[in-house]
Amino acid sequence: MTPGGSCRKKDYGFLYGGLGDLQTNGNPLNLLEVKGLVKRLSILGLPSCTFFVNALLLRVEAASVEEYGVVRKAGANGALGRVKRVTLEDIAKIVGVSRATVSLALNGKGTLPERRRDEIKRVAAELNYIPNPLAQALRGVRTHSIGVVTNYFSNIYFRDFYVGLEGAADTQGFSFMVSQAYESIEKEKQQVARFSEYGVDGLIVLPCSQENEHLLRVSALGIPVVLISNTLGDDFAAVVADNVRGTELAVSHLLSLDERPVFHIAGPLNQSAQQLRRETFCRVMHEARPGVTPEVYKAKGLRAEAGYACMQKIFREHESPFSLFVCNDETAMGVMTFAREHNLRLPDDVAISCFSGDTAFSSIGVPISTVAVQSRRMGEMTARLLLDLIEHPEERDSPPVITLPVSLQSNIMDHL
Image 1 (cartoon, one colour):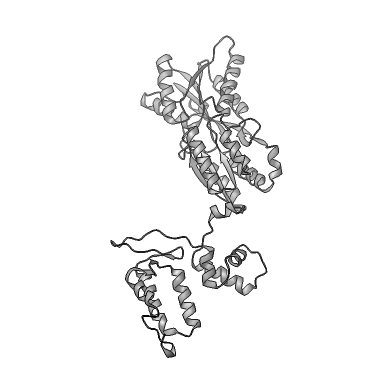
Image 2 (image 1 turned 90 degrees about the horizontal axis):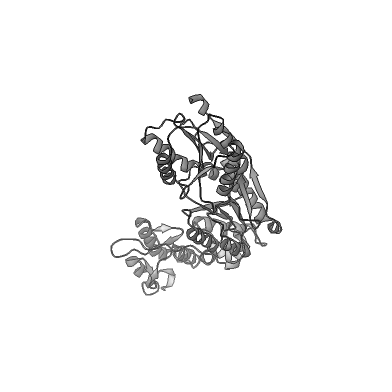
């Protein structure tokens, strides 16, 4: 370094080299290092040396490589490499404090002077610092995140469910991530394991079978689980619809139309909700029409294509008119598609009643009856129950099951 504070290449040669390939000492140039150099040079009274730093910053800006407070190394073809996450250590280097001090400041703890605490927060904000949820989970710190495992993203029932879930979770500062299991127990196990590895504070699961070992393992790790729509014995909290009452309403309504036969398209019987609906359908039919064997057609899944396939079989075996109690709205979509393709009139030839979200069919004007489940309310209640179990672990020993009321909505009589 020359007298008077000027800067020579041999003193700060790494800065010159950095101009060529965005590197310092052979490593990818970090914007934190550049800002740190500016601060140190200013303290040393070497303003002329900041020319080289500013030149590097211009290269950074021109390449549009500033993201999450880090500079990415440009490859030979101009492509940008992987972004390095800003860490507490990075912030500590800039501010000139320890990593522990930065952690205390960002978490609102410790007895730091307000000026220093504000400086740390300002630097963290400028660098777009994002806490690492995995590191927080390993330290036993809440990540304020929830994992949700359902069957399909396209399931129209969950449209309002997510709205209710988000509203309740957001008020407590929680966010949620969603995955789909495609009605596969192996996929469900995989998604549950991933969420637990991500460090979520709780799980919401729509179980696709009666297997529960993977959920018991997660619970043993201290991660509460709340089930939706289905129950798994007394081991887990759950929020479900009143499947018995809903089935009674739907089947009784179909029986009241006329003397036509009533059949049931049942969902997978390894799910508690579908099993209850099937059992209740058979009971109501026995009571209403003694001596007539209830006919049940088992759908291979809860999808439109499963309903379509069942309808093919029913149409081969029976002449219209007849009535159908369908396990859910997705499956009913397949039934309606078949009816349209074969010029079957609703409800004159085929009368349909199914379980559904309370707004699923409200906008399409189809003449059917639905057992309306308050899907948004279910989302709200599920979130509140899970958040309560997160906040009060002692309540997990006696997990509650909340049953939501249902109602029958029908416009069939208007079209007969």
